[in-house]
Image (cartoon, rainbow, N blue to C red; front, top):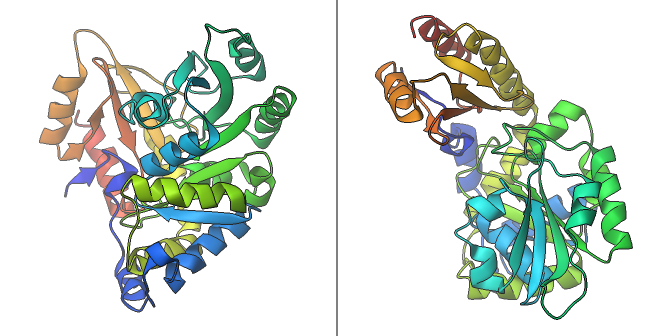
Length: 338
Protein backbone atom coordinates (compact mmCIF):
# COMPACT_ATOMS: atom_id res chain seq x y z
CA UNK A 1 0.00 0.00 0.00
CA UNK A 2 1.51 3.30 -1.16
CA UNK A 3 0.60 6.32 0.97
CA UNK A 4 0.94 9.36 -1.27
CA UNK A 5 1.40 12.57 0.74
CA UNK A 6 3.28 14.49 -1.96
CA UNK A 7 0.37 16.90 -2.36
CA UNK A 8 -3.41 17.14 -2.28
CA UNK A 9 -3.15 17.60 -6.06
CA UNK A 10 -2.76 13.80 -6.39
CA UNK A 11 -6.46 13.24 -5.62
CA UNK A 12 -8.44 11.39 -8.27
CA UNK A 13 -12.12 11.62 -9.19
CA UNK A 14 -14.36 9.19 -7.35
CA UNK A 15 -16.63 6.86 -9.36
CA UNK A 16 -19.58 9.07 -8.37
CA UNK A 17 -17.79 12.17 -9.67
CA UNK A 18 -16.91 10.45 -12.94
CA UNK A 19 -20.54 9.40 -13.42
CA UNK A 20 -21.68 12.98 -12.81
CA UNK A 21 -19.11 14.27 -15.32
CA UNK A 22 -20.30 11.89 -18.02
CA UNK A 23 -23.85 13.23 -17.73
CA UNK A 24 -22.82 16.89 -18.09
CA UNK A 25 -24.51 19.05 -20.69
CA UNK A 26 -21.83 20.83 -22.72
CA UNK A 27 -21.35 23.57 -25.30
CA UNK A 28 -18.57 25.86 -26.51
CA UNK A 29 -17.29 27.82 -23.52
CA UNK A 30 -15.19 30.22 -25.62
CA UNK A 31 -18.56 31.51 -26.86
CA UNK A 32 -19.97 31.35 -23.32
CA UNK A 33 -22.34 28.57 -24.40
CA UNK A 34 -21.37 25.70 -22.10
CA UNK A 35 -24.27 25.44 -19.62
CA UNK A 36 -22.32 23.41 -17.07
CA UNK A 37 -19.40 25.84 -17.05
CA UNK A 38 -21.88 28.69 -16.67
CA UNK A 39 -23.55 26.87 -13.77
CA UNK A 40 -20.20 26.38 -12.00
CA UNK A 41 -19.26 30.01 -12.49
CA UNK A 42 -22.61 31.21 -11.16
CA UNK A 43 -22.33 28.84 -8.21
CA UNK A 44 -18.88 30.07 -7.16
CA UNK A 45 -19.78 33.72 -7.66
CA UNK A 46 -22.83 33.32 -5.45
CA UNK A 47 -20.83 31.46 -2.80
CA UNK A 48 -18.54 34.45 -2.34
CA UNK A 49 -21.10 37.18 -2.97
CA UNK A 50 -19.49 38.23 -6.25
CA UNK A 51 -21.09 39.32 -9.51
CA UNK A 52 -19.33 36.87 -11.82
CA UNK A 53 -16.71 34.14 -12.07
CA UNK A 54 -14.43 32.47 -14.61
CA UNK A 55 -13.45 28.80 -14.90
CA UNK A 56 -9.78 28.25 -15.78
CA UNK A 57 -7.47 25.24 -16.13
CA UNK A 58 -5.26 26.07 -13.11
CA UNK A 59 -4.75 28.23 -10.05
CA UNK A 60 -1.58 29.67 -11.52
CA UNK A 61 -3.66 30.94 -14.42
CA UNK A 62 -6.36 32.46 -12.19
CA UNK A 63 -3.72 34.20 -10.08
CA UNK A 64 -1.88 35.51 -13.12
CA UNK A 65 -5.09 36.72 -14.74
CA UNK A 66 -6.01 38.58 -11.55
CA UNK A 67 -2.59 40.24 -11.43
CA UNK A 68 -2.85 41.24 -15.09
CA UNK A 69 -6.31 42.77 -14.69
CA UNK A 70 -5.56 44.56 -11.42
CA UNK A 71 -2.22 46.09 -12.46
CA UNK A 72 -0.41 47.95 -15.22
CA UNK A 73 3.33 47.77 -16.02
CA UNK A 74 5.72 49.55 -13.62
CA UNK A 75 3.46 48.79 -10.65
CA UNK A 76 4.25 46.52 -7.70
CA UNK A 77 2.56 43.68 -5.81
CA UNK A 78 2.93 43.31 -2.03
CA UNK A 79 2.87 39.72 -0.73
CA UNK A 80 4.61 37.31 1.63
CA UNK A 81 8.06 36.22 0.46
CA UNK A 82 6.98 32.57 0.46
CA UNK A 83 3.69 33.09 -1.39
CA UNK A 84 2.82 30.93 -4.37
CA UNK A 85 2.68 33.83 -6.82
CA UNK A 86 6.27 34.76 -5.89
CA UNK A 87 7.83 31.32 -5.49
CA UNK A 88 5.99 28.91 -7.78
CA UNK A 89 4.50 30.71 -10.77
CA UNK A 90 7.73 31.09 -12.79
CA UNK A 91 7.92 34.84 -12.32
CA UNK A 92 4.66 35.19 -14.23
CA UNK A 93 3.91 38.56 -12.63
CA UNK A 94 6.91 40.00 -14.54
CA UNK A 95 6.40 37.99 -17.74
CA UNK A 96 2.67 38.62 -18.16
CA UNK A 97 2.11 41.91 -16.40
CA UNK A 98 5.43 43.77 -16.29
CA UNK A 99 5.15 44.36 -12.55
CA UNK A 100 7.53 43.97 -9.61
CA UNK A 101 7.00 42.27 -6.25
CA UNK A 102 7.76 43.62 -2.78
CA UNK A 103 8.18 40.39 -0.77
CA UNK A 104 7.53 40.66 2.98
CA UNK A 105 8.92 38.20 5.51
CA UNK A 106 5.72 37.30 7.30
CA UNK A 107 4.98 34.76 10.03
CA UNK A 108 4.33 31.30 8.62
CA UNK A 109 3.17 32.93 5.40
CA UNK A 110 1.01 35.65 6.94
CA UNK A 111 1.64 39.38 6.64
CA UNK A 112 0.17 42.16 8.78
CA UNK A 113 -1.37 45.55 7.99
CA UNK A 114 1.67 47.20 9.58
CA UNK A 115 4.05 45.29 7.30
CA UNK A 116 1.95 46.09 4.24
CA UNK A 117 1.79 49.79 5.06
CA UNK A 118 5.58 49.88 5.52
CA UNK A 119 5.99 48.27 2.08
CA UNK A 120 3.92 50.85 0.20
CA UNK A 121 6.24 52.84 -2.04
CA UNK A 122 6.52 56.63 -1.93
CA UNK A 123 5.15 58.17 -5.12
CA UNK A 124 8.33 59.05 -7.02
CA UNK A 125 9.69 58.64 -10.54
CA UNK A 126 12.16 55.93 -9.47
CA UNK A 127 9.99 53.50 -7.49
CA UNK A 128 7.30 51.19 -8.89
CA UNK A 129 3.78 52.13 -7.82
CA UNK A 130 2.23 49.91 -5.12
CA UNK A 131 -1.11 48.75 -6.48
CA UNK A 132 -2.03 45.22 -5.37
CA UNK A 133 -1.83 43.12 -2.20
CA UNK A 134 -2.04 39.33 -2.56
CA UNK A 135 -2.83 37.07 0.40
CA UNK A 136 -2.53 33.28 0.33
CA UNK A 137 -4.96 31.39 2.55
CA UNK A 138 -4.00 28.80 3.67
CA UNK A 139 -0.26 29.34 3.32
CA UNK A 140 1.56 26.52 1.56
CA UNK A 141 5.14 27.26 2.67
CA UNK A 142 3.78 28.44 6.00
CA UNK A 143 2.68 24.89 6.79
CA UNK A 144 -1.04 25.45 6.25
CA UNK A 145 -1.27 28.53 8.45
CA UNK A 146 -4.29 30.78 7.85
CA UNK A 147 -5.77 34.24 8.21
CA UNK A 148 -9.01 34.68 10.12
CA UNK A 149 -11.66 36.97 8.71
CA UNK A 150 -10.89 39.56 11.41
CA UNK A 151 -7.25 39.62 10.26
CA UNK A 152 -8.34 39.93 6.63
CA UNK A 153 -10.76 42.74 7.48
CA UNK A 154 -7.92 44.81 8.96
CA UNK A 155 -5.86 44.34 5.78
CA UNK A 156 -8.88 45.16 3.62
CA UNK A 157 -9.45 48.41 5.50
CA UNK A 158 -5.82 49.40 4.91
CA UNK A 159 -6.09 48.64 1.18
CA UNK A 160 -9.19 50.85 0.91
CA UNK A 161 -7.43 53.70 2.71
CA UNK A 162 -4.33 53.37 0.49
CA UNK A 163 -6.16 52.78 -2.82
CA UNK A 164 -4.78 49.23 -3.27
CA UNK A 165 -6.57 46.20 -4.72
CA UNK A 166 -6.73 42.98 -2.67
CA UNK A 167 -6.59 39.49 -4.25
CA UNK A 168 -6.94 36.15 -2.48
CA UNK A 169 -5.03 33.09 -3.61
CA UNK A 170 -7.50 30.71 -2.02
CA UNK A 171 -6.13 27.45 -3.40
CA UNK A 172 -6.89 25.78 -0.05
CA UNK A 173 -9.43 28.26 1.31
CA UNK A 174 -11.99 25.56 2.06
CA UNK A 175 -9.53 23.76 4.34
CA UNK A 176 -9.39 27.04 6.25
CA UNK A 177 -13.13 27.64 6.40
CA UNK A 178 -13.96 24.16 7.73
CA UNK A 179 -11.40 24.82 10.47
CA UNK A 180 -12.54 28.31 11.48
CA UNK A 181 -16.26 27.86 10.92
CA UNK A 182 -16.31 31.08 8.90
CA UNK A 183 -18.29 31.33 5.67
CA UNK A 184 -17.63 32.22 2.05
CA UNK A 185 -20.04 35.16 1.88
CA UNK A 186 -18.42 36.87 4.84
CA UNK A 187 -14.97 36.26 3.37
CA UNK A 188 -15.87 37.41 -0.12
CA UNK A 189 -16.79 40.96 0.83
CA UNK A 190 -13.17 41.77 1.73
CA UNK A 191 -11.51 40.91 -1.59
CA UNK A 192 -11.58 42.48 -5.04
CA UNK A 193 -10.93 39.04 -6.51
CA UNK A 194 -10.67 35.47 -5.24
CA UNK A 195 -9.11 32.37 -6.81
CA UNK A 196 -10.23 28.95 -5.59
CA UNK A 197 -8.87 25.55 -6.60
CA UNK A 198 -11.08 22.55 -7.35
CA UNK A 199 -8.32 20.00 -7.96
CA UNK A 200 -6.65 19.83 -4.54
CA UNK A 201 -8.56 18.61 -1.50
CA UNK A 202 -11.89 18.83 -3.29
CA UNK A 203 -10.78 16.05 -5.63
CA UNK A 204 -11.68 17.38 -9.09
CA UNK A 205 -9.20 16.42 -11.83
CA UNK A 206 -8.68 19.95 -13.20
CA UNK A 207 -9.65 23.52 -12.61
CA UNK A 208 -9.74 26.74 -10.63
CA UNK A 209 -12.28 29.55 -10.56
CA UNK A 210 -11.66 33.30 -10.38
CA UNK A 211 -14.37 35.59 -8.97
CA UNK A 212 -14.92 39.34 -8.99
CA UNK A 213 -17.12 42.06 -10.46
CA UNK A 214 -18.71 41.71 -13.91
CA UNK A 215 -16.28 44.29 -15.27
CA UNK A 216 -13.30 42.47 -13.77
CA UNK A 217 -14.39 39.08 -15.14
CA UNK A 218 -15.07 40.54 -18.61
CA UNK A 219 -11.45 41.68 -18.71
CA UNK A 220 -10.32 38.37 -17.21
CA UNK A 221 -12.01 36.40 -20.03
CA UNK A 222 -9.91 38.23 -22.60
CA UNK A 223 -6.70 37.64 -20.61
CA UNK A 224 -7.61 33.95 -20.23
CA UNK A 225 -7.91 33.73 -24.00
CA UNK A 226 -4.50 35.28 -24.69
CA UNK A 227 -2.95 32.96 -22.09
CA UNK A 228 -4.34 29.95 -23.96
CA UNK A 229 -6.97 29.13 -21.36
CA UNK A 230 -10.06 29.25 -23.56
CA UNK A 231 -11.64 25.78 -23.52
CA UNK A 232 -14.41 24.37 -25.67
CA UNK A 233 -16.60 21.58 -24.22
CA UNK A 234 -15.22 22.19 -20.74
CA UNK A 235 -18.48 21.30 -19.04
CA UNK A 236 -17.25 17.79 -18.33
CA UNK A 237 -14.50 19.31 -16.19
CA UNK A 238 -16.78 21.94 -14.70
CA UNK A 239 -19.17 19.19 -13.66
CA UNK A 240 -16.43 17.68 -11.51
CA UNK A 241 -16.08 21.03 -9.76
CA UNK A 242 -19.82 21.26 -9.14
CA UNK A 243 -19.88 17.73 -7.73
CA UNK A 244 -16.88 18.48 -5.50
CA UNK A 245 -18.43 21.64 -4.08
CA UNK A 246 -21.71 19.82 -3.43
CA UNK A 247 -20.32 16.58 -1.98
CA UNK A 248 -16.69 16.86 -0.85
CA UNK A 249 -16.51 19.99 1.31
CA UNK A 250 -17.33 18.16 4.51
CA UNK A 251 -14.39 15.76 4.09
CA UNK A 252 -11.79 18.53 4.35
CA UNK A 253 -12.03 18.69 8.15
CA UNK A 254 -11.01 15.03 8.29
CA UNK A 255 -7.91 15.87 6.24
CA UNK A 256 -6.99 18.65 8.67
CA UNK A 257 -7.55 16.35 11.64
CA UNK A 258 -5.44 13.60 10.08
CA UNK A 259 -2.53 16.02 9.70
CA UNK A 260 -2.77 17.02 13.36
CA UNK A 261 -2.95 13.39 14.43
CA UNK A 262 0.21 12.52 12.50
CA UNK A 263 1.91 15.63 13.80
CA UNK A 264 1.75 14.26 17.33
CA UNK A 265 3.49 11.10 16.13
CA UNK A 266 6.30 13.10 14.49
CA UNK A 267 7.40 14.32 17.90
CA UNK A 268 8.64 10.79 18.70
CA UNK A 269 10.86 10.38 15.61
CA UNK A 270 14.51 10.85 16.54
CA UNK A 271 15.64 12.57 13.33
CA UNK A 272 12.80 15.12 13.28
CA UNK A 273 13.80 18.42 14.82
CA UNK A 274 10.43 20.17 14.75
CA UNK A 275 7.36 20.81 12.62
CA UNK A 276 5.73 24.11 11.77
CA UNK A 277 2.46 24.62 13.67
CA UNK A 278 -0.12 22.29 12.09
CA UNK A 279 -3.36 24.19 11.51
CA UNK A 280 -4.90 22.59 8.41
CA UNK A 281 -3.92 19.70 6.13
CA UNK A 282 -0.20 20.45 5.60
CA UNK A 283 2.76 19.28 7.66
CA UNK A 284 6.23 20.73 7.10
CA UNK A 285 8.84 19.18 9.37
CA UNK A 286 12.52 20.01 9.76
CA UNK A 287 15.32 17.49 10.18
CA UNK A 288 18.14 17.19 12.67
CA UNK A 289 21.69 17.18 11.29
CA UNK A 290 23.18 15.28 9.55
CA UNK A 291 19.90 14.27 7.88
CA UNK A 292 18.75 16.09 4.75
CA UNK A 293 15.52 16.07 2.80
CA UNK A 294 16.86 13.98 -0.10
CA UNK A 295 17.88 11.19 2.30
CA UNK A 296 14.64 11.28 4.25
CA UNK A 297 12.34 11.39 1.20
CA UNK A 298 14.19 8.32 -0.14
CA UNK A 299 13.92 6.60 3.25
CA UNK A 300 10.19 7.29 3.37
CA UNK A 301 9.77 6.02 -0.18
CA UNK A 302 11.35 2.73 0.87
CA UNK A 303 8.51 2.48 3.39
CA UNK A 304 6.02 3.35 0.59
CA UNK A 305 5.33 6.79 2.09
CA UNK A 306 5.65 9.49 -0.57
CA UNK A 307 6.69 13.02 0.43
CA UNK A 308 8.01 16.27 -1.04
CA UNK A 309 11.42 17.72 -0.18
CA UNK A 310 10.93 21.31 0.97
CA UNK A 311 14.43 22.71 0.88
CA UNK A 312 17.61 21.03 2.07
CA UNK A 313 16.41 20.11 5.54
CA UNK A 314 12.60 20.08 5.43
CA UNK A 315 9.94 17.66 4.19
CA UNK A 316 6.26 18.30 3.40
CA UNK A 317 3.28 15.98 3.79
CA UNK A 318 -0.18 17.00 2.56
CA UNK A 319 -3.28 15.11 3.66
CA UNK A 320 -6.25 14.70 1.33
CA UNK A 321 -9.46 12.80 0.63
CA UNK A 322 -7.71 9.81 -1.00
CA UNK A 323 -5.97 8.95 2.30
CA UNK A 324 -8.34 6.35 3.72
CA UNK A 325 -8.72 5.32 7.36
CA UNK A 326 -6.82 2.14 6.52
CA UNK A 327 -3.96 4.22 5.08
CA UNK A 328 -3.92 6.40 8.19
CA UNK A 329 -3.60 3.40 10.47
CA UNK A 330 -0.86 1.97 8.26
CA UNK A 331 0.97 5.32 8.18
CA UNK A 332 0.99 5.54 11.96
CA UNK A 333 2.27 1.96 12.14
CA UNK A 334 5.06 2.60 9.62
CA UNK A 335 6.08 5.76 11.47
CA UNK A 336 6.88 3.58 14.46
CA UNK A 337 9.37 1.70 12.25
CA UNK A 338 11.22 4.80 11.02
